Length: 315
Image (cartoon, rainbow, N blue to C red; front, side, top):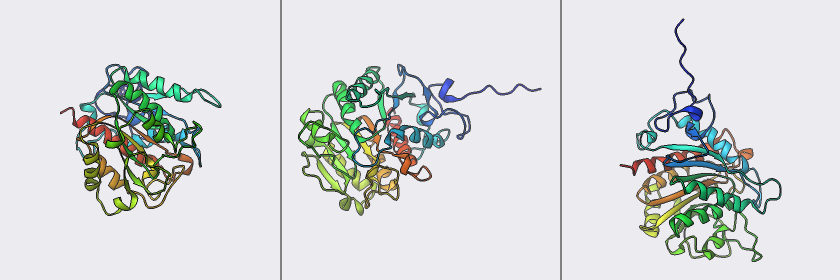
């Protein structure tokens, strides 16, 4: 009897480089079948999840976002990636560091826990990619990134400006931007919000490319306006999945009609590969409102394209 092939399961004992070999419908569901580890030393990129939705203002459920995005990502591994037509994992060592450990119940310590654990991952030298979670998590993530890189230009795809502020110190997923500006985490003069199609009481000095302005633009044209704003500044990408129209991302807590298509967003992101990216997150995926993983697939595609950008800049 011929020897049976040894089990692989790339998420558990696979190589740091190269794609996985098991079928996409089997095995442990790390992001794109990358190796699971809590120690990203030696890796170029650490992907992790922050399953927190305690700051939502409407429909909860984004705590299940990291699970859904990982599940949707499995289909991408093992083939040359579009549009780069390369295997990013031939150039880039990417690991999945699991999820942020959060306090239970009413959790005033959650922001500090997110920041502390993000800071620990960044201290290894890995580039941090975060799967959310609601949009509040971007604030502690920015604190950790700025501690390492200094103030950043913020590139925010979103249906909302997230500039609400009740003046009493409470911060929700819709009010992290004023706090980031007050703390000097982001440089408003080089920051931009794309796809906005709601009205907030202030803009905090960030440029706004709203939904109507994006409607007739392709991805490259949208990217050109972002590049003009950001310039050569170190930048952080935060992608609220509700920046996409509900036709392309129904599974989110505060959907707003009239948004970007998946093709526009992905095209813009690829055209932004020349920016000096220092980190990113994708947030507000809420699987209870999704259908056939449509939203999770969009979110996984955004991260997959971002990883291609990081791989392409290795030369």
